[in-house]
Image 1 (cartoon, rainbow, N blue to C red):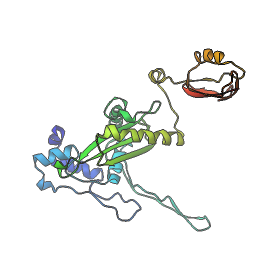
Image 2 (cartoon, helix red, strand yellow; image 1 turned 60 degrees about the vertical axis):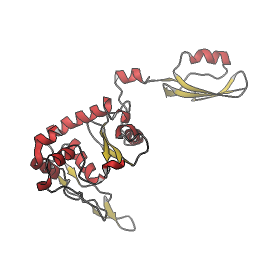
Image 3 (cartoon, rainbow, N blue to C red; image 1 turned 45 degrees about the vertical axis):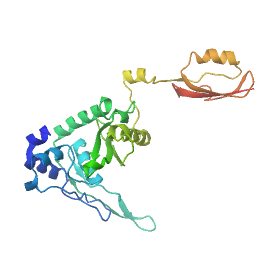
Image 4 (cartoon, rainbow, N blue to C red; image 1 turned 180 degrees about the horizontal axis):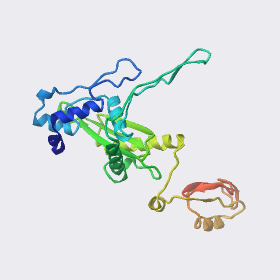
Length: 278
């Protein structure tokens, strides 16, 4: 609220406009809505205060994604789109679809600062439940109170991007009317972590662990030893040497007949081990 009061109504709305919050995003879908804002002449101290922490106005999730993307991509407003090209029935490309962009929504210097601050939110702040070891993730929590305010209804959300130093993907989760705990950092951030856990390897973005992460999360790998022919006592002694996770023992025999993973494979620490006895 202090920052909102210092910025003032004129500047607040100036930056809202630069971030595209007074217009439709232009996505290639019908029926897009736009924002609902106070008229500037109706904004007094209370309205300015509530606007400054994200309430008393309405924007669409798409508008939020476009604005947030510009904040961390160097300042470019990108038109969201689903279509990339038009092809004929036989697969011949007829036309490539192009979409406008707008530069300088924020300065590159501001964008760099925001990336650092939003990465800190996930690394050790309210968004730490979106943290994934080995990946640099930035994001912001949100817990919006719905009208009327006496109804105790909320929208909990989290918006995240990765890698934080060179954003390639952004995702947002909105949870409407959560039951019980309703803070975005508690219930929405873990969903983003699950999403990124699948998306980032798919995009070919590999983990890069710090030494602290390697120690804290027991990160590393080793060559799978040979358990074939070992007795249960010998297996027990070997398990003291290697960093396996769960042991799944199948069969009532004394000697190991089969194993998984196989001997010689490179496996991660804390991987599960399956042994078949006969």
